[in-house]
Image (tube, rainbow, N blue to C red; front, top):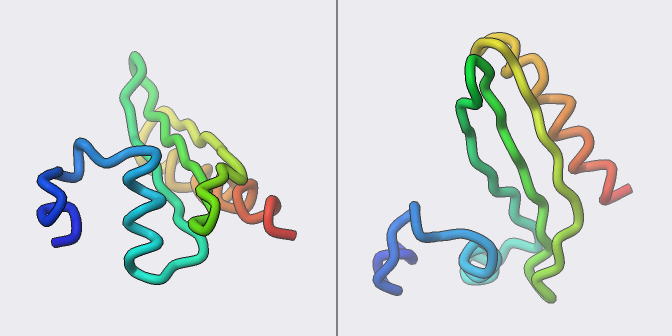
Length: 86
């Protein structure tokens, strides 16, 4: 709903848009990402921003040959993001 009010859709929301959306809902932090198929592998790229100044705090990537392997690697990628907060 917030994106529609700005005339954008989810595909157009990246970088500053992610941070601004986090601010509007009162979040201190926002995690965003994308999933890609690269050849026969799956790749998930994650970013952690703080919303007050819009700084990128951390980024991480998980890869897998299939969705099950990617799922197992995803928790490690999230742990990497969260280590920036410690």
